[in-house]
Length: 183
Ligand code: IMP
Ligand code: MG
Image 1 (cartoon, protein in one colour):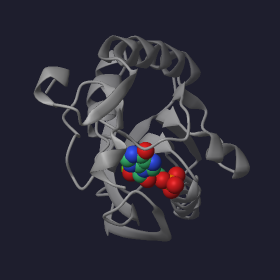
Image 2 (cartoon, protein in one colour):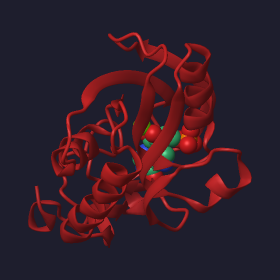
Image 3 (cartoon, rainbow, N blue to C red):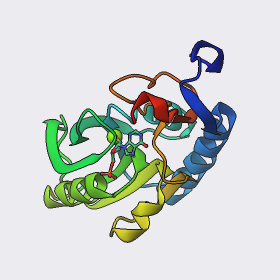
């Protein structure tokens, strides 16, 4: 779905489709190098990371396992609830494995710090994080994302997997949602 089909729902585009794809390609090259000769399993965080998993994994020049988790830290609005729940767990045993979590956005960091701890407690050998976007609030928490696509301002964004009330995930770019839609 592109801008012409969106009316005035999108205030402005923050990251274009081309920028996203170029950046994911760069990050994949880095991951190829960092994990050369090592085991790797990608854990995508549903549902926001679907686009990033699909595109990033196809830029990797190596075999990789892919698994998914669904967690919830947001309600139906635009504010974090502070509560993380597992809605769908991994199918795989990650004991002794090297894990790369693929996320859409690092905001308060609540989701990712909880998830990192959770996966480490299962005996993963290592847990690193790749996130497409990072907001400024992420600086205040103790989550280290090794691979970051873009640093963006603290505004509510949608597209490329990110939703507002389950909509806008299917935009190929990332944009600021017009305030009239939620304020
Ligand atoms: P955190 O726990 O505050 O870091 O929030 C992480 C989760 O909140 C992400 O995985 C998203 O699903 C959601 N989220 C945070 N910021 C946004 C946004 O600007 N748009 C859409 N979803 C967001
Ligand atoms: Mg998410």
